[in-house]
Structure formats: structure tokens, C-alpha cells
Image 1 (cartoon, rainbow, N blue to C red):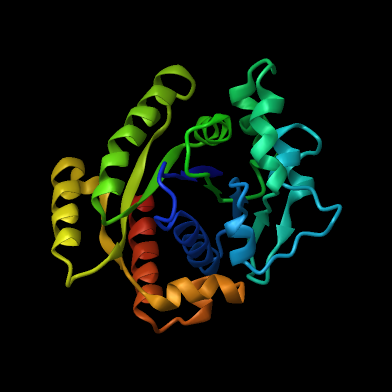
Image 2: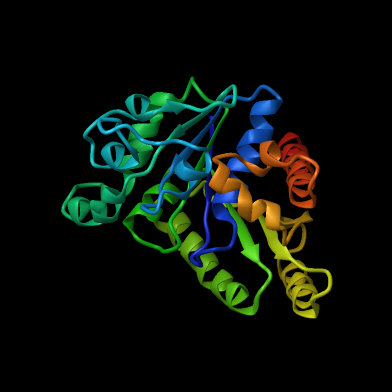
Length: 255
């Protein structure tokens, strides 16, 4: 089982969209995939059309030790694609964990019970570096970074890399950069091209060749509770995610 955190300290850069669409593509080639919605806003849960039942455990319950990870899993309408939903209560988890021994390793311990169940686990992280995100990074083998093609997003990338290196030094020596996905790219926008050039110059082949364009259909898909790959397979955004998934799998085989 490979655990990948989908992370960026800036919000609105495409973390959730990237996580659920790569997961959808992986499930289509018969990989067993779990997405953990680790953001109190619950965007991944909503984007998959899941309405959490009143007594349904969430990622919050798993994190504070109220239940095992396997009890919080919900099946989606997509074969071989499961999710652990979020809860607004997750925002308070950091306070509850603060005095706990080995608090950075709680999620890692909880997910160890799923080792033989899934091929991939994608953790949709909140847009901040708090104890929730630290738990995700400590649990993960690698980090996938969606990067919006805007200057402020690029500025935040340097801080994120410092955070990843700090986690690697102190808690998880195996943690590495899975790759950077350029999102909300506009070929008519010179700034997008400048950001792409700068990121590729600095990070080299860690940047995926595939870029995700700005696409109205991508923005619409969550309101219908579907990944863009199911909502409108023929649109430019869906086709970009198909190519990204192919590139992701090719890199996995090379590793």
C-alpha cells in the first residue's frame, strides 16, 4: 500500500480535484484506492456525492482514536474506490491531540490496519501546516503538490518544500516529493507560462509534463457529486487528468 499526501499550503489550487480524479483513474485500471478527506471543509466528501450519515465515523474519529480506520471507510459509486469522509469536528482535532504522546504518528498507526486492503491511499490535506497535515505527511511515502499557475502559489511552494524537508528530517525519512502538478493553466496568459518555466527550471523532472487547464466543467463537477472523469469525460479538463493519470502510472512503474 502506497500512501500519498496531496498537499499545498495555499487553498483553491486543485488538491481535491487532483486527488479524486487520480483515484478514479487508478480504480479504472483495477487498483484498490482509498481517499482520506483530511480537510475540515470536506470538499472531497462533497465532490464524491457523499452525504455522511449521522453516526458514520469520519477522519476525525480515526485521528482521535475513537474508531479504527476500517470502520470509517465508505464505498463510493465507483468500483474499487473508497473514501473516509471528513467532518467539521476535524478542525478541533489539533487541540485534542496536543498533549498526546507520539501525536504526529496517530494516523500512521491507524492506517497500518489497512495495509493489505488498498494499493493506493491518497490523503486530501487541508491548506495549512498544522498537526493534521503533519500526521498526513508522517504517514505518507510521498507528497503530490498541485500548484496553481499564479505568483502567490509559487511563493508558497518554497515554504511547503521546507516543511516537507523538516518532516523528513524529524519524523519520516522515507518522505519524498512525488511530483508537482501545474493546475488552472491558461495558455493565453503569459504569467502561467512564466510560472511553468520557473517551476520546471527549479524542480526539473519532478514537474509532470501534463498541465491541467482552467476549465468550467471541472468547477461544475463537484456540485453534481462526480469526479470530472465521470461528469464530462470529453472536456479538456477531464482529458488532462486522463493524461496525468497515465503519466503518474508510468512514473510508478519506473520507480
